Length: 313
Image 1 (tube, rainbow, N blue to C red):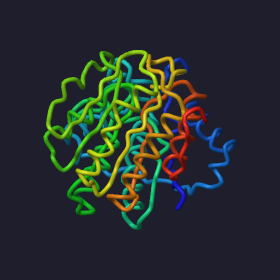
Image 2 (cartoon, rainbow, N blue to C red; image 1 turned 60 degrees about the vertical axis):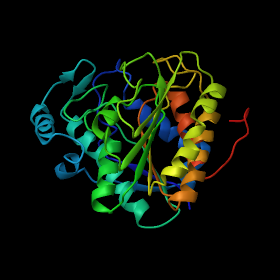
Image 3 (cartoon, helix red, strand yellow; image 1 turned 120 degrees about the vertical axis):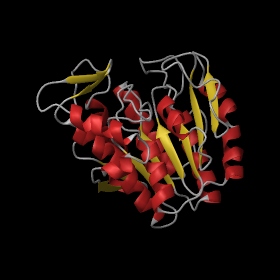
């Protein structure tokens, strides 16, 4: 089975300025690399529906959800947080971004040996229960996780977050919810200055020092796979951030494409063993466009079950 790529029609149009790192060019670069790599032809593709407000309320304070709708401007640009802005198209983009996870969960749960990648923006893992932060409005991966629990009757879901920035929003929302186990790696100390120590027993955090290489990353997160096997999730969700790449300007880790392919292939192996191969991955960070696009291709190849020896690309 090939990976299915989910896209939202307005995700490409959310644009708060040419100098903002979270730009539409991120998705253009990914699409270009998917074409040049041949994956555009071998993957399946699906357009998504906007997320329903009732599904957003599975992860967020309903009053906060209302406030995002109310603050959406009809013209111009509104900053809801220091680096998180809204244009007239942003609300629609955020709804499509969250809706991608919901639609991907439905598709993955409808069969076996299914893997999905949501090529969407704005990202989500910094959005907390009642606040926007770090380019994020709605927590896409938690919406997907809670939707899977509530609408597909699952008992255990795992979230794996390998962004360079700690997924503070995800931890904020799910801490103490034993139906969801979160595994996260992130540069520390670094924005958003959270994640170590962890806040609850259902959170597994791996803080990484600046300058951390792929070899060190692999060694530190290697225990995740047995922990996942022991937890036996019925679905694995991934917050896939690629800003830990050595070429990314936002941080100071030294990962390469083969590291992303490695962790993706290892997660696929676990999924094959414990949850019929069901994985839903959604895009988070990654701000060097070339490195981001190459890393997404490596990630998707890993999800397809490809393996890679160190030194390849």
